[in-house]
Length: 332
Image 1 (cartoon, rainbow, N blue to C red):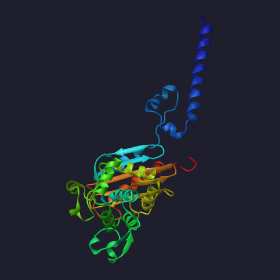
Image 2: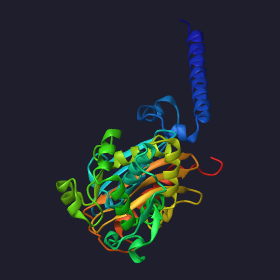
Image 3: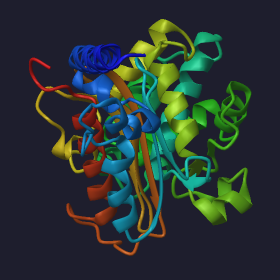
Image 4: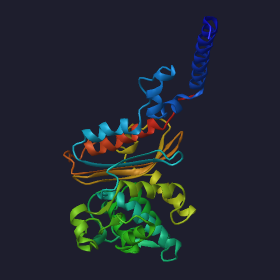
């Protein structure tokens, strides 16, 4: 081949290289920021080889956001997150059985609504508060005069919204102590169990689990799955699921999930607190869709009953990070 021909080939080659780079750059510009952040590591590593500028940093993943909080906590932590629209997930020790504290009251509520749908219970049945029903801890019924009457539906609402222990025992008396665990197992939540009535260890149907976990037990994954079914109106019936979510939206526990949530993010959730364990689980309603979240802690070094308890702060901080991760910037 003559020198002129060789020069023409070299020039054509350079033009092809430049054309290829321009095409690749145009493709890159058409990829949204979020999509580009999700490209495989192999593609990102090969970017310099293609003549593309490599990204030095990408958007923080859920793991980037949550792992430092989990690692810093002085206690045992289990977390499960699932965006119910996109399916994006994060799990940490999510299959480890953990204490629920009052979070188990959600499963009790599900069982009460299930029995009502089957005609075994009437949610409008009048219950009478007795002195022997009154137990310590959260709620208001222990402060009221025995002889007060309320419906089973109202007792369920107090059990969830105020985590009323006396109301919980009144509900459990109607459905039976063992019924909640049996139904949870049939529904595919074998680790989600109510062990006994509140402050009534003598009623335990799972003595060994009572000694290990207290009032109830579950896993972070099972709890997220339970809330996913609830949000999708698949628990008991669409109408019952909607009613149960209504109770959960009234939960009064401002130092847990709601504490640091961005403006506009609503929540339907339930928490639980005992000395060594703090729990919270529910649905965060972000602008990108509902997110099921469960944060379970145990063996906590901080056992103070204060607004700044480390277990409660952890659940609030994780809820904030999850909400921010799934809440796109305005106009984004």
